[in-house]
Each structure stands twice: as structure tokens, then as C-alpha cells.
Amino acid sequence: MTATGADREAAGSTTRGYWWWERRRSVALDVGLALVSALECGLEGVEFARNTGIPVPVGVVFGLLAGSVLLVRRRWPIAVVLVTIAMTPAEMGFLMALVGLYTLAASEVPRRITVVLAGMALVGTFIVTWVRLRQSVAEQADFGPGDWYVPLMSVFMAVGLTAPSVLFGLYIGARRRLMESLRERADSLERELSLLADRAEERAEWARTEERTRIAREMHDVVAHRVSLMVVHAAALQAVAPKDPAKAVRNAALVGDMGRQALTELREMLGVLRTGDALTAPAAAGAGAVPLASVRRAAVAAAATAASEDGPRLHELEALVAQSRQAGMTVELSVDGEARPYPPEVEQTAFRVVQEALTNVHKHAAGAKTWVRLAHRDAEVAMQVENGPSDSAAADAGLPSGGNGLVGMRERVLGLGGVFVSGPTDAGGFRVSAVLPATHPGLSGA
Image 1 (cartoon, helix red, strand yellow):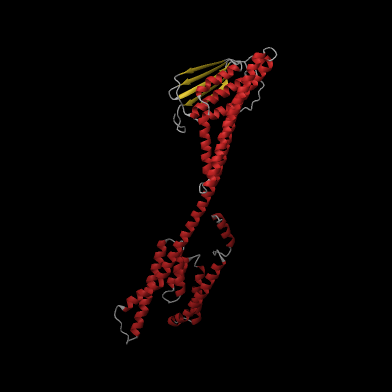
Image 2 (cartoon, rainbow, N blue to C red):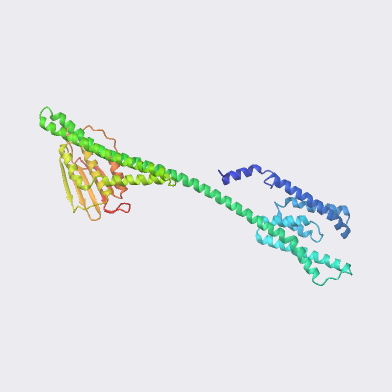
């Protein structure tokens, strides 16, 4: 695993402590270069003292001090180059000139300053070389080169002492900046990948939660209505068995039919879930290059599609209302508009809303008169289930309630872009209303 920028910065900070140097080897290198440069300038100071007439010790000390300036090349590269240019007439500090120009070109100093100082060093070297060569040619009478010799050799010397150092320094500086840019991009990419991984984990957790919620909602819709009716019929069977054995037999038969229907729906739902698992395992085993997450998403989508295609439809509302009537509930069903097919998700959601509303009536308002209204409109389908006040003696059938019925209905309707409203009526009953769009961008067309 690569270190991030913060880790590298923290590691770099631990190596600091030598003024402007970051590493010990940098200190050793600069100290060594400064010693060699001071020694060179000290030796050249002897010749400088003889040419200028100053005492030799003064020339040597001057050379040692000037050459040791190379020690601060990383901190003040401009100062080092300026000292080098100033020492050019004395023909001292060739090593300092080479290293100083290289350091200046490789540093973060603006390019225009680098060009100006390099140009000054080039001109200074050219002038000194020109003067020295002319003096040498004049002193040697038997050596008579052409007029081209002095300027050409001066250009060669000036370019040879300045251009290589500057060009190499520019290359090293550009390479250093490129590496730093690549490290920053790598750190940025690592942070982005970490952020994407966190977001992917959040999305995966959200998807798992949504899938668990969907399965729980489907199980609730399948079981609650059938079992509620079974409990109502069982209570009626217990009440009428001693008085009307024939009616008790009919109620017992209804309880058996509803139990078988509940088992059938549960079996179908579990079959859909097993189908999703079966799709996941062979695909993951047979296609090793296919990501498991993609296979699972495809399996979940297939399971959801299968569940919606095998789910109930609006034309089954008559049978649903008939079952409630057989349980002793007074239910009126009215349908407005011309019936037409809708996407499976819309029909299944509409059916489940009516089913859950009737289940709640069985649970909490047994014996209350109920009205089921279905309206087919141009771009939507609306449904409403309203019950009146129940008899005080039969106000509650004693069925357990988890409080998830209305929440599940709302989630279903809002998930399709519809509107859901529920609440008590002024007459003392309860009303559940929902409106679903006939088509939706996320749904398959009818």
C-alpha cells in the first residue's frame, strides 16, 4: 500500500532539523562542495593576489570566504550566482559557477530571473575570456591566428561554462516538478478511490436495507390479509358452531381455502427469492470475470421483475372484496372509468393498498361498513378505502398489529411517484386514499 501525501509530509517533517536541509546526505553534499569550492578559490586567490598586488594571505582568505558561499546554494541560489558573477573578473570560483547556475535553474526561482542571471554569467565569462585571450595572443608574437580566433574561443568558453549547468538544472527542476505533480495526482486518486469505496459501501448497505424492506413488505402483504381473514372466520366458527353446524362447516372450508391461498403465495414468493439465489451462484461460479456485485444486482432485479409480474392485478379486486364479504364485512365496491391495463408495478401496488386497507378494517373496525372505490383516469388510477364507525362490541378483532401497514402502503405509493393520504374521518371511521400515475419513467410500459 502506497503512502499518502500526508504520510509523506509527516515522514519528511521528521527528517528536518538541519536549517534548510531536508536530509543528512544533502548536508554532507553541500558541505563537501563548499569545502572543495573554498579550496579552489583559496588556491586561485594566490594568483589573484599576485596580479592585483595585494598580500597573498588576503587573497587566500578572500578566496576561502567566497568559495564557502556555495554552502547556502539551496537556500539562496540567487546570492550564490551573484557572487559567482562578481568573481568572474578575478577568474575564481569555476566550480561554484557550475554548481550555482545548476542550483538556480533547478530551483523554484522564476524563469525570467534565471534567464537574466544566466545571461549575466554568460556575458561576464565571454568578456573575461575575450580580454585574457587577446592579452595572450599579443604576448606571443610567433602565434598569429586570424581575427576569428578570439571571439570564437570566447563564445565557446562562455557557452561551455554556463549552458550545460543551466540546461541540466532546468531538466532536473522540470523532472522534480513532474514527480511532485505525479505524487499529488496519486494522492488525489487514492483519496478519490477511498471516497468511492466508502460511497460504494454506503450504496451497498442502502441496497441491502431496501431489499430487506421490500421483502418484509411483500411478506406482510401476503400474510397479513389472509391470516386476518382466517382469524375472523375462526372466531365466527367458534361462535356459530354450537348453533349452526352447517354455517360452521362453511366457515371451516373458507378458513382452509384461505390458508391454502396464503401458503401458495408464500411459496411463490420464496420461489422468486430462491430463483435470485440460483441465478447468483451459477453466474458467479461459471463466469469468473463477472463481478459478483453485478451478478447480484442482476439477480435482485430479476427477482423484483418476477415478483411484479407474478403479483396480483386490479381485476382480482372483486375476489378480494368477496373474501371480506364472506368474513362478514359489509363492503361496497365501485369502479369509475374504463378499465385498462397498467404496468405490473402499478396494478400490484394498487391491489396491495386496497388489500392492506381491508386488513386494517378487519383488525381495528370489525363489523364496520366499508366502501372501496376505484377510479380509472386519463393519466392515473386512484383508489380509496373508507370504513364507517364500528360497533363498540366489535371495535377490535384482537389481531396483533406491528404498525407497518400504513408505512408499507406509503412507501409503495411514493416509490412509484404517487400520492398517499390516510387518516380518520369526521364520521368516526378511517380513510385510505392513493393516486398512482398510469405510467412512470422507471416502469415498464403497459
